[in-house]
Each structure stands twice: as structure tokens, then as C-alpha cells.
Amino acid sequence: MAFLLGDCLLLDRLKDKGITQAEFARYMKCSRSYVSQLISGDAKMSLTFAINAAHFLECRVTDLYVLEWDSSRNE
Image (cartoon, rainbow, N blue to C red):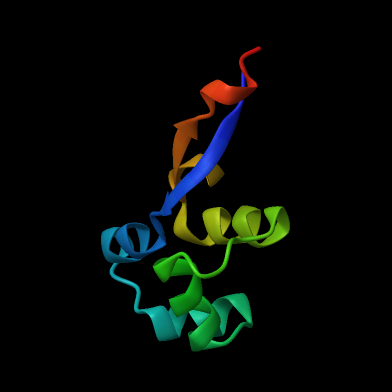
């Protein structure tokens, strides 16, 4: 079984919690620009960042991205 990370769902999780991108960036000790890059798909979260983000947003790590099935690895 193999999955790929699809679209980032961070903006959806922030809206669910009523948290601004700036507030999230301050909590995560990263730049607002980096948060924007995550949301746009120009950057991917490290596992450590995703675990901390999920803890702060009270969600699962797998709630931060659309998971896509990679059928090419099903050989």
C-alpha cells in the first residue's frame, strides 16, 4: 500500500478552528510566508512539523493533506 501527499488541507483546518495564518505561524515559530507556501503546495510539512500542527489544531496528521493512492507502487 502506498500513498502520496495531495493537496494541503491546512487552510481548512485553520478555518475549522478560527485561527488565522498569522496566529498559526506564531504558534509554530515559523514565518507567515512558510505557512502560505504550505497552503499553496509550494512546500510540504516535515513529519515533526505536521505532528506539532496536528496537536495544536486538535486533528490527526492525516487530516492535514489529501492522501492519494499511488497505483504505480502496487506491483
